[in-house]
Image 1 (cartoon, rainbow, N blue to C red):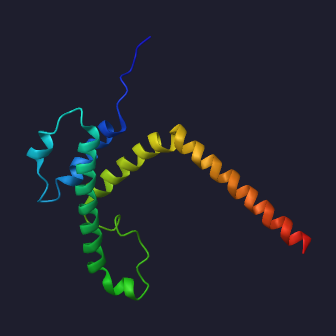
Image 2 (image 1 turned 90 degrees about the vertical axis):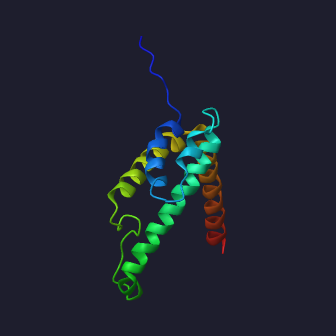
Image 3 (image 1 turned 180 degrees about the vertical axis):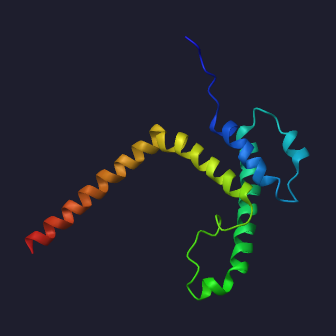
Length: 134
């Protein structure tokens, strides 16, 4: 039986995060590359913060470009996907797929989600009972 090496979510997302980070002129690739390999959380935090900055800047540019349409309620699109940079959109799509693969299947997340449904169900039932008894 062949054993497939399991990558961490960060290892899969790193390429997409680096694409985003490299769009920021302040991103320090030398600093990033000197971070120890065993410091995934630190590396992820750094890339994520730079990537978020890039996304904010991209959305700001789209907002300015479409300001008149936005103010007149004629612009009803996603700011991020309305940008001109296809690499940003592709990177986000890749990260979204990784999140779906790992986060939404993670036992702790599913447990919390299930508990939320149970609480909401009980709350709705309680409200319905009160309405019926009125």
